[in-house]
Length: 361
Image (cartoon, rainbow, N blue to C red; front, top):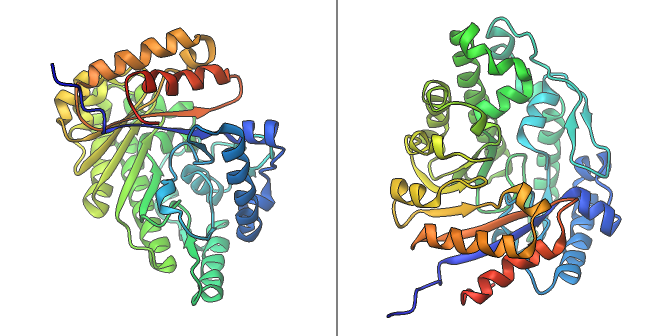
């Protein structure tokens, strides 16, 4: 029997703001998020700390895998390095909270109670804070580092690959409207549709704007539907897919992400144009995903958070083996986000289980 080829199996770890604060003493406040020079210096210290603390394992400060570290090989200044929906929420009037020891958030749902789509359409986004500040910073740093080997990453971009990253239309609507958005498709389906389509157009406009100002061509897009698994396949078909394809047809090469068990959505995800990477959530069936998307597409798989928090290394090993068996063949990356409360031995178990299968980590 020939030995199975594991050369296309990989693993990557990201460490959370909370853990970096608790274990490394790093503070993630306004100074970090709004002063790119300070952020660069702190990011250097964090990179050194991660390398020393987690060696020999590849665990980094990677914004839950939005950062592609191979495209951060030289000095950079990160402008507006915040989660995309928080930038929109802040521009809509919500207070941006940066507590320092946990991820930033917005204080309110600024579109709660929205009645007409003009409340979202009639906005000049580049005049709204913090977007106007970020545009000024891009201009200043592009001029300052014009003749130096320094990359300027604008909002929605985390590395020099040119891949834009956004939250999906459903997830963004949920963040901006709140729990009421779950009932809106039934109480006012036209308004729900108009909102997600307009969110897609807003992201399209801002991605193009930031790309132009930073002189960073768009090579593709990550669409993260973090709330996606909470919606039915029918609502994905009616709301999410048309909105996503506005972005896919503009920017191409889509990495699509859904948190949680998403078996019921895989058929709909297949209807998103130009998908090149599928990032599936906890316990989503990899075999079904591989059958739908083909042997060559890259699948990024994330372990169940309950398993990571409450399981033991034996449970983790069993999950890794199950995932490899379901994958059969094709590019597969195991990804995890080391958050507070996750026993480190469970993280180590992922690496050891892969090593036992002859996979180089």
